[in-house]
Structure formats: structure tokens, C-alpha cells
Image 1 (cartoon, each protein chain N blue to C red):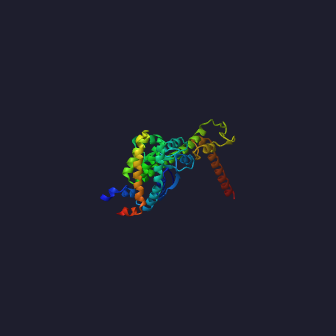
Image 2: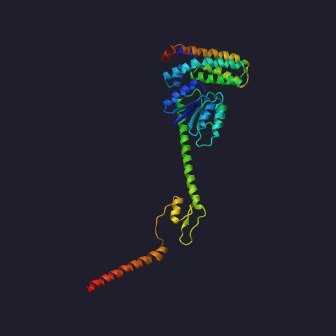
Image 3: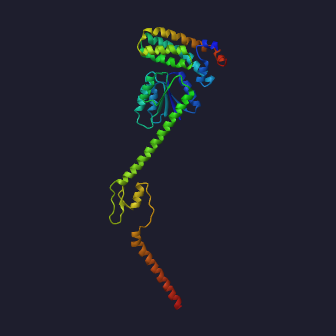
Length: 218
Length: 122
């Protein structure tokens, strides 16, 4: 799990790097907001970032606003870690798009717990994104079955997407999660199966009668 | 504990900050001793240019750094300086920079004496 640390202060970077490494996170470092933005806009960016607010070039607030414009899901989880401790700062920071806010100097165990909370949110967003993708895919299949399907009036074959005729059950199986189990309905049983059974029985009886006659004459 | 009141930093708080990791603390102290005097010089230069944004940014940074050492007076002065810079009231900022310089010099002097590590346990 990778965590991005963004701070212009070498001491804080050193402290966070050592602390996070000890907690088994892989640490990526940026010394100002501009460098952090270059990292966070990549698709393979760390999923959680600890941000200082006051930095040269681009500050943490502007960085938050930019990250919020990213289209991908989940977006990086942003925790402000700043000495700006006024209530209005906290409000401004969170309104700008930060997910959490900690005031320096921070307690390590609190930071650890807040990172854990962030990871839970990231995990939840990821599983939701996966679920939505699954549902969209399922919906897509359902839609395929809802279209106008050409079917032969006589043999009931269906003309598929690639323009060849196939059995209706094969077509439905390919376009949905539905599967067929073959059976026979009462009407077809009376029309096709029963006469077939009757014919087989008569043949069988005729054969037995012939064998009996052959036995009697021999 | 009466002697601790005279220290420019709170060693117990500092040690809590690094979760008892003295080696890490020594590295951080070395970075501070190296960087902080330059940051104060930058602060002075920014004030001479009447660059309120830069005064605000630098004093804010120093406030965060000294807070980690539990340096209450230094933190208070840096906080005041940040506030006047934010409000664009730089008239009184010169005196605040001078006070911050003194406070930071005390911390740097404290950590420059190699004996400071002996005080952690004592």
C-alpha cells in the first residue's frame, strides 16, 4: 500500500517517511503541491496522501481542488496534516475536497488510526466500483435480450448478432445468465411423445408375437 | 522538575512525538539545527521586501516545526507573526521576527550541545 507524503519541511518528511515505513507502507515523497499533482494525476498514483497546506508553488488547498477534478474512481484519499488549526481552516480544507484533517503537531497513533479509516473508505469505494461495473455488465446483457429479435415463424430459430440462425435456447444462453434444462410440456407429450411411445410399444409387441409364433412352429 | 521549565523545548513531548525513537529524533534535530537558522534569515529577508505572503508562509512553517519540539514560546511568537502577516499588518512584525529569532536560537543552542540527549532520561 503506497502513501504519498507532501510537505516542504524536510523534518516532517523525514518523520513521516520513517513512521510510515515502520507501519509497512511504501512512501512516495513530494516537496510541494506541484510535484504532488504530477504524481496524483497518474492512474497508478498512491491511493492515500498526507498533505501539508502551506507550501511554495502550489499549496495543499489548490492540490485538493485539482484532485477533486480527477475522473477516476476511487480518487486518492486526502488527509490534511497542517499547522493551520483554526476552525475556518478545517472547514475550508474539507470543503476544498480533503477527506480528513489533522493539526500539527500530530499524535502518531491518531495518524495511524486515521490512515486506517481512510483505507476502509478506499476499500469500500473500490468494492462499490467493482459492483457497479458488474451491474452495468449484467444490465448490458439484459438490454441485448430486450431488442427486436428476428425469429423463424416455422422452426423458431433466431437470427443472431453475427447474422446466422441458431436455436433459441443457444441464443438466450449466450445473451444472458439464463441456462436451459430440457424437458417436455404436456401438449408436446400428447402430440409427439405419446404416439412415439405407442409406436415403440406396438413394434415391441409385434416382435414378441413373431418370436412366439416362431417358437410354436419350431 | 523545576529545572525543565528553563528548557526551550519539552523533551518528554518531543520523545512522544517520535514514539520513543531516539535515533529518529537525533536525525530530526540535526535537520532542524541545519535548516531553522536559514529559515529565520529568509523570514527577515521577506519582511524587508514587505512580502507578507512569504512572511506568512515561513512563520507558519516554523510554527509547525517548533511545535513538534513542544517549544511553547517559540510557537506562540511564530503564530503571532503568521497572524499579522495574514492580516497584512507588517508594522509590528520586525519585533516579532526578532523575538522568534531569539527563541529559535535558544532551541538551536540547546540541541547543538551534545549533552541534550543525556537530559531525555533525566
